[in-house]
Amino acid sequence: MKIGILAFSDPQFAKYAFVEEIAATIEAKGHVPVRLYTPQLAFIRTDGKLVITHNGEPLEKIDVIIARPNFLEDPSSHAYPAQLLEQAGYRIINSWPSYWYAKNKLEQHVTSLTNGLPMARWAIAKRTSEIMLAADKIGFPVVLKVSFGSFGRGVFYADSKEVLRPVADYLTSRNAMPIIVEEFLADADRKDIRVFVVDGKVIASMERTAPPGDIRTNTSNGGSGATYQLSDRERDLALKAAKEYQLEIGGIDLMYTKEGPVVVEVNANPGFEELQKTTNVSIAGAIVDYAIKVATK
Image (cartoon, rainbow, N blue to C red; front, top):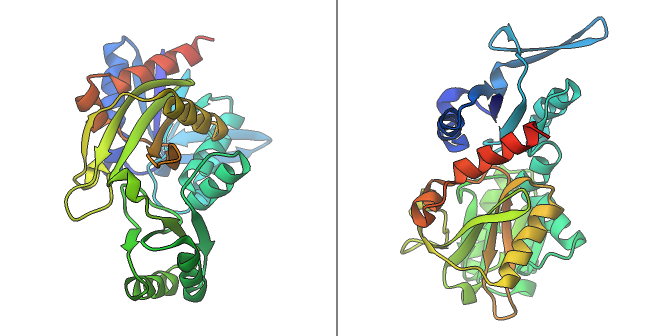
């Protein structure tokens, strides 16, 4: 069986797509990995046919493709590879539009509101004056986020108007996209919960703690992971979030509040290096096992 791994970058920038980790697991299970990189793909329509090439050669038959959308910018320009691959008959795991919803932080807030997923108090605004107004209504401290980004990049903390205003001025002057303002959840004590979901099931979870002097829990930025036993309420919320975002494979980030868990973020390209170390669960194995299951249906 041939199992593709689709990274949305050239190979030298695909570290956080975990292509090699997944490829090694595919080989260990007796199958053939096919590494795909979107810059090397070309889609050519002539004479009523769609021809797809990869690195200049016709794309071979692949039983199933695992999408690893490791881009940081606006996901709209990354829709076409999965769309056209599916048009050509390839089965994509975490296809369009699921990764578009998950990679777009603005859409995450809209989708969560539409589907009744609990979140911290939030606002979306484009001008400094509206950002300041939103922060007043939410209450300090607040967290600012840019519309697109991963690994904690584009996340800012402000505990007063004096701190917030220059940050808001900077973000709105350099970025035409709206800015997200969120309540800072002090109850969470600089911790969150990463839940890894595959095929509607929780595979593993861990508690992440931000490093000293930071609020960001991302382990790529120095955050640390520890084993964590989910409550039924947390498990149900993580599974509901994955379902609403149509994610076959997803990382759901939750935070604790006195009122119960809330969704912080949904990830279509969740990293798993620290999670595997912390829990001794083979996340890559779970991903590949699901791909095999899909391909043999």
